[in-house]
Image 1 (cartoon, rainbow, N blue to C red):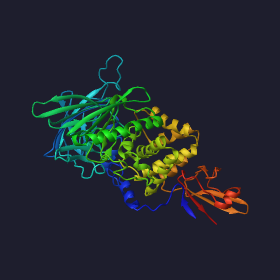
Image 2 (image 1 turned 90 degrees about the vertical axis):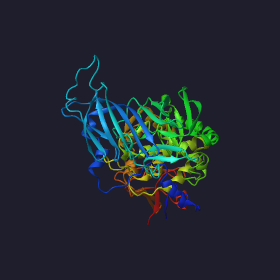
Image 3 (image 1 turned 180 degrees about the horizontal axis):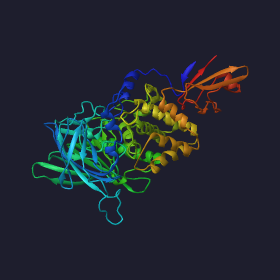
Length: 571
């Protein structure tokens, strides 16, 4: 007999529909998995020499969209510091076709640039061949420079956002313009020029300036900064982000919005502003839905993960024409004020219908994706696996551990085990869409192995404290778990992240002995498992034995459901 621990096989009438729905859950732009990568993939996904020498300190992005022509124009003033100096310095600026750079201005002069597909190489000549004159106490790595890049064009349009990326040109139910962007995976360079790599966030944040007709309102990340009448039928809205922010998280929302607000006194005892921007005809529904779920979410996540990471920038939900995205301090919300995922429970357990999926899931990304960001999209399981697990922890905090375990067991049904969770590095390619469900199941399994919820919680909080506003790779996160738990978890991570094999616990009876071992595993895999009778087994790849008890005689080996393993009795 062979079964997967943690699965309860119930015939749901809509199981296939729910599974298909979940496969597109909240993964923004699932990039096609290529057999062969191009030079453009390397330019997009790696730290090239033209990226390595400089560090972004802030962005000042200005954009003016034209709804009728579906075009935009604007500029991005990039503040940067210099790591190293040499002759003939070139800077890589990313801006995807068919968008164009119109000019590049540095210290009052236009610079020469050359295009290569979605990359522009801006020639600074010998400007950075030496540090130049520095002020007292200043170093080359602290001196800020500024380059302004003017751009225009018709950006790629997102046809099926958020799974298809680009600029979104929609109309609301009353036929009024409703615009925004969704570009995770595809990249922010689909609409504005930037250093489009997750490893380099603007350390000091960003200004986002959006010029729109005065009949509309523009909302963006961070706090409201100013509203300026342009005297030509347009308004300029400016928003300020004070913290580091991912490129793909910087987005404008433009529509017939109305605003309401609240406050939350969290773990730090500081006031966190809660701001909500929704279409005018949805105001009352939003007050009910957001008022019910946001504060319980913050209470649960601050307990598990530590303080909300962006108090200075506030917490904001903005109604969007697409399902949702984790835009830092300005989460896109498009779940139609329904519980579950568009009214469905992706777990089939019933627990997923007690809260709004997009509010909980996308807000969980404020800790995992926005506070802690992976340097390479290949490690995106860190964003999605932890955030999927945040749903489990939200349920546990408010409904109890049994409910959380049932939810986790349900979402495990959606794992396909097609390819490994970690993708190839340096080519802007993520791993399997299983990074959601399997990533959460991996964390739940590791939690059982640690066997101390206080330690497990401290690890989650420690990650958000020790890597506060930083970029990381998967290996750093894996090593952190091993160090803080006092257990070598490296082979467990290798098994679930880098292979598609699920460990099989084989067992057999020989005379009065029960023999058992791991198969279908990486070399050296020695994960302990707990049985339903309370017994711990510590299998290896070699046969081990224990005394046959009455429990074993009647039922064989039954592993607790919270371990993501398979069990098989062999001859």
